[in-house]
Image 1 (tube, rainbow, N blue to C red):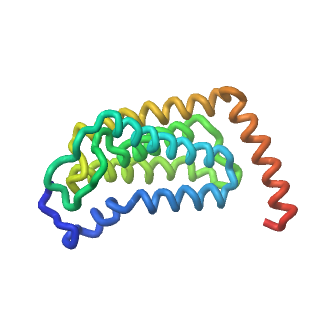
Image 2: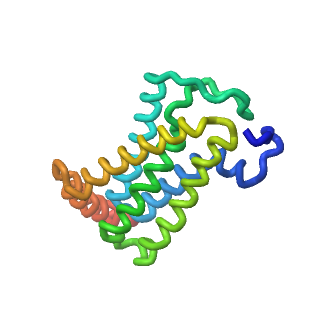
Length: 184
């Protein structure tokens, strides 16, 4: 712990401490703006990853570090924030390298997204230890879970496992027609 107290956190640490809310909002807005089933699939994967981390956390039952700036009642291994952040920093670059940029976005979005996501998510993981919420081992556990979850989730989509991508494309076309009829 760096000695920061709740009221004296620098703005960047306050932002990173609350960034899950910002990230959820940005993801939701991106899904609504693009109307992309692929991006919705990504968002569902990030949610599944964090829920999986919470389940693992309950099974392992490892305490959080002593001396954090606020008391958390939940367990610490693996870090759910690190799991979710790593899901983003793994899936987004893979999607930008191997999938087409959605037609609602400019082509440069495929370059900018990883350049923003990777350092932001890295800062989130760093902040979990700096804020005293987790140990480095707990963040590393979250990192490992996030890489595994994102890799599997990406392979399922890009490999069209069970026709998920094909079904998603058909659903996106159908939803686009329905929304157009409604004037959206």
